[in-house]
Length: 579
Picture 1: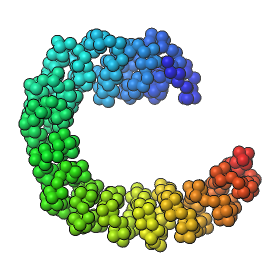
Picture 2: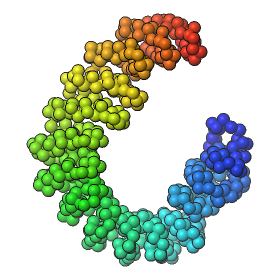
Picture 3: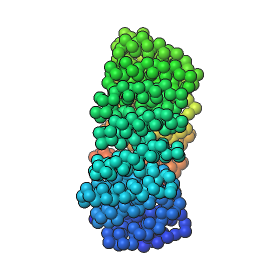
Picture 4: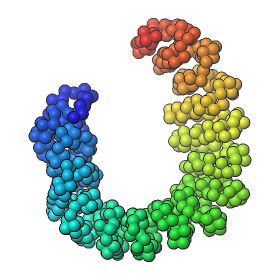
């Protein structure tokens, strides 16, 4: 049995007592550490005392039950000495609770437990009993677990029990409560994989029932079952049935059903093959790109990258690209953003000439999009077009967009933009990093938001690793070191954080000549936080680089041992002792 270390800082007896606390926060904390309790008291007491007590918690609040399901999902089989049957009643009870995530987790744990039972006879006896009790439960939500469990054991039980299970699924799929039918529709894909245990007539009967259902959230999941069926012999025997049902879903009146179909379109294409996709489903994708619902256009645009590999280059040029030219002007920014995330993937397929004539204009237009998220998304996919057209031809088009994004009001946009620099530095070299571009980097290093400054510091380290310390010293570092004289202390902190980030690239001579004078001067800074970080930087450099820089750095630390700030004084003395 695994021994679990108590890292809570609390005595184990107190953790056990908290299981009975009236304070829900304490009960949750204790339930989170059930594995620790079980490990401490041993398997016998866990089986005879802890598990029965846990069953008394099953009427607790949802927050407790969520943590209970999570805790029991760890390694509790080992903690009860491998006697998996002890856990089955608890998991069965959790399959009846209101919270869907708890039911699903409990059902999946039951599946795991069934695989650990000693023999198939035991699996059949226990699993059939649990499934039938859950199916007969007064609480209809328990059927959620039933449709999860049946596919897990249907190939391990007798013919008679298989027939019983199939009849249960059939009844659940026709239940008068829509939520129950939804469960059946969602998990039917797992049962279809057991063809021919579940035969043609049964599969067709269930799917025909779902396709006629008035609830769109039931019809939509048919897609998953059809994809699953295409990987079995059922597809070879019933190909027309499967293709016809796919088409009904693609033409469904509900945009949600069509949306889900489109979301799975690449998987459908993989299941029927390129030829099957082009003949049966390609036109649906093109139609979705023109749908009146912006959500449909968005998901269709998002799927261009995946489904383009299933299309002929001629079809891309003649049928797909003309539609993209209108989508790039769509009034909804999220539609344009979806296009930006996928359109450049067409470049490797259609070649340099067509990319230059057809995709490049779309790229340049999106690069000027009024929504900064669209431009950022485009930048993240930049390599797809630069690999085809080369970087040089695009760099001058990129700089104006980069400049705008660098000044965006949203700090997340500014932070994301910084990452583009290393891409161009690696692809083009120092030529890209003109004074104008380096000015952007310096602005980011002085940004008012910490995350932007930190990303800029990390980018500086990347540029040095790509272009070398000599280039950085000539073009960038001197300007960063000048921050130490700026009044805003955050700029001065940036100097120290940068030194820490690029330390591995600095040699000892450079540290003695340039960094040491900076640290000496900043050790006298009026802001205690700066002096504190001088301590951290000094000890970090001394330990990492060693050699002839240690003694000079010790002197910096010694000068701080008498600092007026107690924290700085403590850090300096501790640093010296560690050296």
